[in-house]
Length: 365
Image: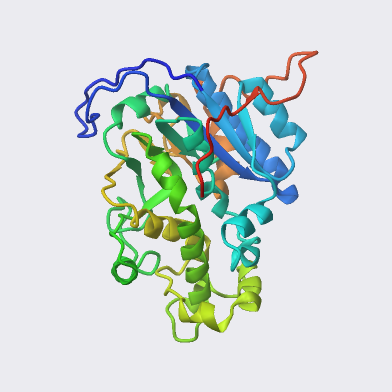
């Protein structure tokens, strides 16, 4: 992948680059596990995200990592908006290859794929990567984010209801004291809880993160195993039958796995991936972190009280459960950020990805 020569400018956010680095390879990255039950949802989210991204930046490289078959409507969007596609094979096989002792048991937990693409990003030579969930909408040129936050290694919004949250802290949702204890038990640095919906990785750090993918999955497995342990925290609320994957975890858990179980520091079983990623990041020495300003990046429903055409942010990770509200919001307040929505594929255009992600020598994991 050919890098463009871009020189980040100085801004007053405390996140200026450590040194001028001409030729940074900038990449926007998405990841998707095919789910037949959520095809319409995924299509609408991806269309909103890509149309808003391309409205202000038609040229920045974009890649979609796909697990499972590529749905025709997703392929059409990749063709329309110039998105590279990298096929990662079946989600089940990827998990099992990276974690033979627990991957099979975690297949029904659908969020681990976001931490499994770093070997490919590293092999592509990416120096700055903005990893976005499908439920991300852009309001201005994404280059602003790359330039303004080029200093730290990892930049994201604070986790909702963490001690840094502008909405107040909820220790039941994130027990940061317990999280610190778990990190200490593992001999890891404590990483500030961040939301993984939009994360910027700088300085080619994706190459270092490729090595921790098995650690990430093992931590996820140990946390899930902890939710099967009587007397461990949050077993009843985060390890209950409402989380379908926990049935498989209980069936596959062995005595040796129970001996390695980790207490789960949240009452929300859906954020296993986030907690496991924070712990895995703590195994990498010397990483630096920062939060996106709430003036630049919104999350959850923070944007819905402001008309779309007046949105002051660069982007928003709006959370999937808000999709219908976002669609209504866009309909009430159309803006240039989403002007491409609903445009059909030109007649005669083949429905296929724009290109494949070009990779050099693969990094081991």
